[in-house]
Length: 389
Image (cartoon, rainbow, N blue to C red; front, side, top):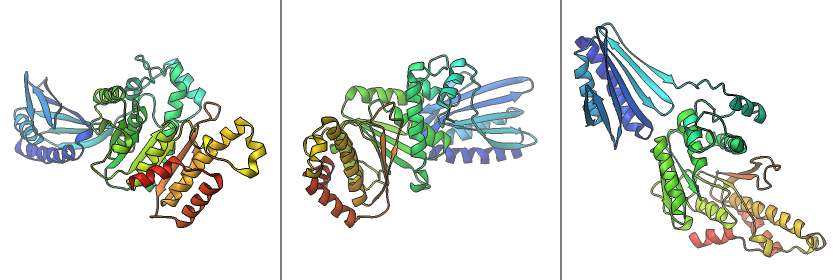
């Protein structure tokens, strides 16, 4: 290739260098094909602890991005043309260069064709346009056990697939209320095997092209190890996991979103309290069992109704999540409560979404204190907030 084309190629590669440094967490690899006459010579680069492990002509080197740019340009001198594909999660960048021209374009990764009967049946059955799409998200869905190795949604995972996709849909509705043009730090409290974090990570980075970093917390070492392994298999380097009690966690950076899915009883309150303590921009919780207020509350006007245990238990559920929502409002959050999934699947189907809009709401706080007195309760969320402040 001539010097003019090499010079232009170098400019494009410097742009990729800047992109590599900015988007290191989603870099997948580089493929280079040099052409001389009718022969092709292929080089492959993969991520290697902040560098790129590059194999070409039988030799493998671990190179910094600067060293790789220099090498690619110096090697190109010896060939007629070069085609380079720079791959990130969700996007490929293609550079084609020869003696006449050098051009670059972005290529969004298209969905794969998937004509298997199970997939078509699943889509018809659930009657929804998925955000986490079969085809494009196959690697993710297989790794978290939703899809079989053959590319079919497992029959016993259809419900879970529907649930996580609807969660993403509800989460997506908040995105325009979160900070723009920065990395979103998302904390998953009681993460378990972190399936929801993996799905959100995929959606934010590969579909919405939003920079994000996920932190998963769980006190069980075994599930943290499982999450770390899944992240490694998927190449999701923008994730970290810690075996730690929620109340003992101290973040290194500003937390934008605190989320909790089906954390049992007062573990949900711990997650909400942590979000409030950290002044996170948003808090999302799908509570699970509610036991705490059931043994505490009493309300004389409803005495004859609450003598029936099933009514008292259901009222305890409503009071627990209602008072959680009110306290979030008192702490300056705009709160919405929606059905996460159909009540036919589980009665624990409410999602609490809270977005920070101001510092405090004194009227809501007064209402909260009044309810505590009227119901003779001392909720765990209020207790945790006072302990941690």
